[in-house]
Length: 239
Image (tube, rainbow, N blue to C red; front, side):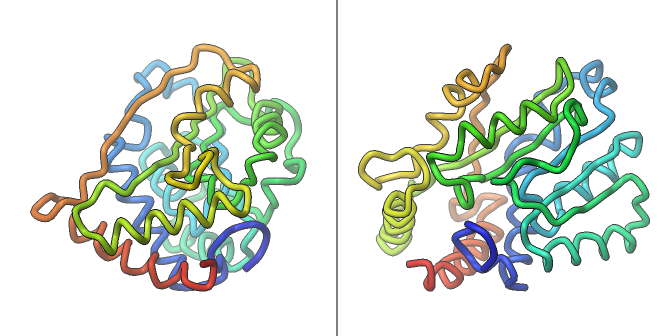
């Protein structure tokens, strides 16, 4: 693994899992930018996705909104190579991918983007690094720009094995200094996002709660089951 990501970010299996996870999260959130009205979308020209992985979200944004220039960065060279190759398959001229460490100063000038997107960053951002990370996100935003933080917490299940695994995951993250749980019973991220944004000097903060229901018989069940099976296997070296 490269950088601080808790799983092997050079793994083809993790690449496939992240692509599926992107689709699940986007659908659960009601679309790519379901919280924005048309007037806000027309003002967005340059978008940055931090920790883009294999580029699933970037590709979809560029395809649906061809007037936007979308840049994805990730520390994994293999992820970026895949994302760059696939953008050619999709014939997307408004997509750019760069290998970059999100925990270092971002290699962009001040006020470069109208929107910065960050998803599930607990997997690679240490708890103590959040202030400096968000300061960089704010630096590259234009005046009036938007910073989107999306994270999740789980463990609501009637299956003892799944419950045990999610608790082990939360405990492991807490022991290496990730998330904001005081006892390792959960990740604690979703309860801190608004506070972190305020500390970074952001204004007009909007929060939304979305549910990804993987219950048996629900639409997301099969995808969620496959994602969990893959994640449980890939996380064993981390544990």
